[in-house]
Length: 143
Length: 99
Image 1 (spheres, rainbow over the protein chains, first blue to last red):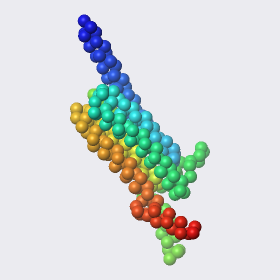
Image 2 (image 1 turned 120 degrees about the vertical axis):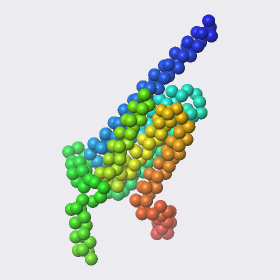
Image 3 (image 1 turned 135 degrees about the horizontal axis):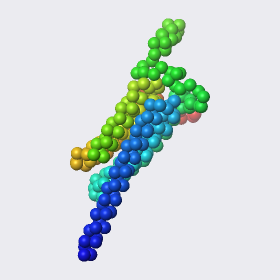
Image 4 (image 1 turned 90 degrees about the horizontal axis):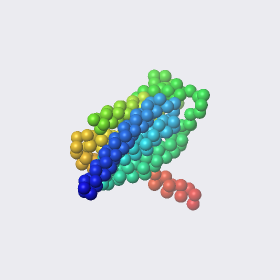
C-alpha cells in the first residue's frame, strides 16, 4: 500500500514535469518566433539586436529548461545545463562586441520619427545601382 | 508531436534570420542575423535529438554553440581590422607613440 502510494506520487510528479516541460518548450518556440519577426520588422540594427536578444535569452532558456524537465536527472540534463550556461555567457558578450563595433563603425541608433534604415540604405545582398554609380563617380573624380 | 511543432517554429525563425542576413543593409545586421541563426541551430539540433529519441545529438549542439560564438567574434574582428591577427600590433604601436 505504501509502495503504491509512493509510486502514485512519483508518476504524478513525472506527469507534472512532463506537462511543465511541454509548456516551457512551446513558450520557448513562441519567443524564438517573436525574435525572428522582430529581426525582420525592427527599424534599425540596434533595435534588431534587442529582438535577437529575446530569442537568445527567453527562447533558448525556455526550450532548454523544457527539455531538461522532460529528461529528469541524467547526463543529458547536465549537457543541457552546459549549453544553457554557455548561452548565458556568450550571448551578452557577442551582443556587446557587436554594438561596440557598430558604434565604432559609424552607425547611429534610430530615434522615433526617423526613417527606417531600409529607406536610408539600400536593402539587398549588395549596394544599390545608385550607390555603385556614386562610388564610381567618386573613384573617377579622385583618379 | 510537441517537438515536431517546436522544430517547425524554430525552422521558421531561422528562415527569418536568414532573410535579415540577405537584405542587410549593413554588415552588422548580417553578423547579428548569423549569430541569431546559430543560436537557433543549436536549439533545433537539441530538439531534433529529442524528437527522434537520440539525445546524444546534444554533443553536436554543444560543439555548435562553441563554434558559433568564436565565429561571431572572429567575423567582427575581421571587419574591424581587416585581418584576424592585427589587434596586438595596434596596441604596440600605441605604446611606442606614447613613449
